[in-house]
Length: 406
Image 1: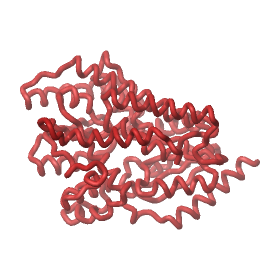
Image 2: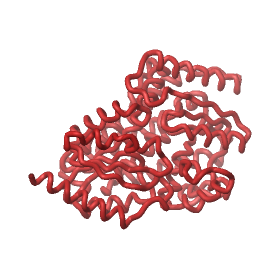
Image 3: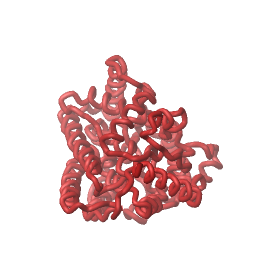
Image 4: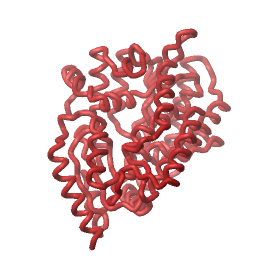
């Protein structure tokens, strides 16, 4: 992975974010738990500090602690085939442990006063958040956009917008407090600016050689997720983009030699980010684009906040039909000058594994989009084999290099 100096600032920003849930000199904030592409702007405008359990799930995977906790969720009835974000997070809760304590010096994840989810990324979040609603005896509300949509109609957007309005009404009744619409517009504006800057960061990988990789994106995406709606995210991405621009001027490459440019489709294997980064660099390959990191590039309009939220959070890649996904992959492959695709088949995340219904073969129908399937999982490392992956990956890279020589 590239040595990005702004990451030191990112560590401080995230430390302050998690510390803010446990202030020492004032009353603790009201806390809402929200899914990562959920309506967090509404929660912020209603006075909540927002915590994201999926971020905690990714941290459990990245610290390789997930397999300590997954079996605990299995013992209370959650299937081993179920989302390993969910099972590792619930297992950690059962055991009363969290890497947040070591990394951010907080005793435990902040306890929720409210839970809000959207099923635009997966439907299992409903079961995940329902568990905690019972555990903490707090209200839980859900947004249910139409699923696997191709072209999105006005009727579908109106349906999602009506759910957002109902959510606002429900929260207003909980606290006998009206929505501050000016604050909502300001929050959506902040989200829009941060999202645009995040998109600019990802687009810098179109440069040849690329100064950044997918694995850098997995780290740098944190503000786009947990600090959406804040000016902090805006300021950070301005700093980050300025640094990457300097790297481009210096012709700095993330892998020192970039012969092959790859597209990563699906979830990261969080506990193996460094493994993959080093494997690609060893083989003069660079993963320059992904659908995962692009999941937080939104087109939001502060002047029409609810409609634009309904649109942005319904049309994310993971929530689209395969025809739309194929078009998106072909477009991005051209923009990023992709030589080949890696499709991660995540054992416990079928919603974000796009190889189940023939998409890779259709994408490669013209022999211009060769692909490799990688078996693994976002958190459960029992589903992943380093030896098997090295063998198949090195063979794939040799094939791509031969293709380029013809």
